[in-house]
Each structure stands twice: as C-alpha cells, then as structure tokens.
Length: 139
Image (cartoon, rainbow, N blue to C red):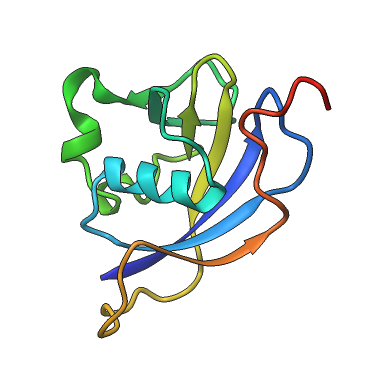
C-alpha cells in the first residue's frame, strides 16, 4: 500500500524558515528508503549519518533510536514505525553535527494501491523553501 507521509523540519543549525514536504511511499519501504526520499525532497547531499527515533519532542533525551548500528535502517519498514508508541512521535535526524531534525507523521490521506506508471517514493506537495544545507559563508 502507498502511504502519504508529512515531513516537517523542526530545526537545524542553518534552519531559517518553515519547510514541510508531503511524500508518497510504499508502506513496505525500509527506513533507508524513507531517508533517501526525505533527502531528495529537501535537496540535501546524502553525506552524513542519520537515524530515526521515537521521542516526546525532537530534542528529548528519552529516545528509542533506529540506526545503522544494528541494521534496522535496512530491515525496518515504514509500516513498522506506525503508530508510534503512546505519547511519542517519529523523528528523523540527519547530520549529527548540524542536527537537521524532522518530524514524520502519517497524513490523513487513505492508503491506496500504487498507481500504474508512477515511481515511488515521490514528492507530492511542499510548503516553504528547502533548507540550505551548506550556506555560503560569505552570505
């Protein structure tokens, strides 16, 4: 089934404005696939480590992490991450130095069968500009 996910920028070292991206992705896709879809949606270079985690807030120290240390990025599916545990949300952290943090939620759009001829994952909507991953130091 194809799910619609809303990815919202919570912050990052160079974050300056609102950025929301709506992505359609197969519920059987891995966390690695979701990572790559988010990277494409915000036009980031895929050049840093990342993780997904459950927490109360994006900066909460009380986290359940899913990272490459035990292979979960390649074995866990998008479907396995929803619904999050009670009082927790799903977050995506990219680049531990610049701390790009995004919340990931299921949209209210009903899951649907893949459309013929459509390649998933795909970006279907967005609000705001892409964050600038590496701003020019002269600006």
